[in-house]
Length: 168
Image 1 (cartoon, rainbow, N blue to C red):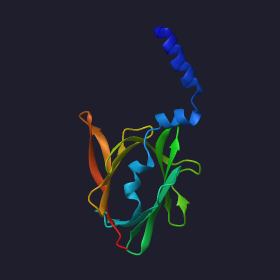
Image 2 (image 1 turned 180 degrees about the vertical axis):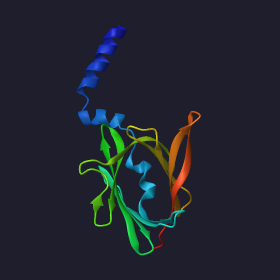
Image 3 (image 1 turned 45 degrees about the vertical axis):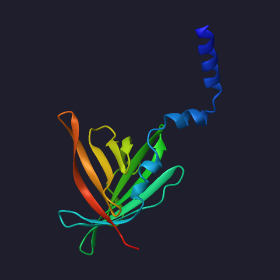
Image 4 (image 1 turned 30 degrees about the vertical axis):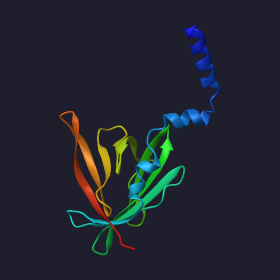
């Protein structure tokens, strides 16, 4: 009798719409990273000024961009795109020198796969490596991007950028 129930269950699972199956296995969501939406600034320890903007998430993507400057001179542009790929949230990053000279190959980008999230915190791991990137909200007007590497079986994170929200 239990085999009959198993057969019925598997039969109905086969009739489930493809979209419903995919939805249940997707790792990560745009609500996990929506706290980074907005206009932000940061200053690095080496003196770079960073201005960043992340646009509101749409159903299938979220985008952001940064410009990194020393004084009035541009050092680097960075474009960030978040999309669903292979049923998981992926962060893709491309870097450009002044003159929009790409640092990555034409059809390549740095890719980071969603690992985990909790309230106002999301972690991505670089594809093909162990390095992780942590996005973490720290109060109403601040969030950090930190880099993590494994140490003694756990990840240890160091702040890369500490952003402050730009007042409207």
